[in-house]
Length: 164
Image (cartoon, helix red, strand yellow):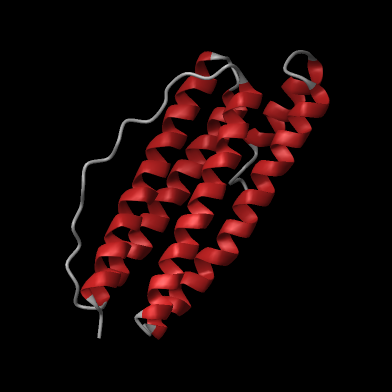
């Protein structure tokens, strides 16, 4: 049985995932204005991934006979101090999402909803990857700074995301 408490929590997670998508789209728009089109592309790929995450939860609610309740999406930040600030915000945001997934897992445990626990294992693994990727980019930006040839090279590298 899909409890109302868990359904409400998953509906909130749908909103959180859609906000994440919106945030990454805003970050991409900012990076475009900085002529960092590879980083902007990285954000567009991230935007798509967050939409996919929202749809995983959306489908889960429907598959369980629940009711999806879409809520308004908050307006994201639109300005940053530069690429490092953007990616530090990415890391901070992914850490927040990790805590949200962990809280959702705790609800699934308390409700003894094994199907939700299985679904959430995928998201827990995904968050490890998300934080690792963001950390690597932040650390690289700290090493190279935000001007010069190394920044251009990193921008070009990030442009290749999703080409696999």
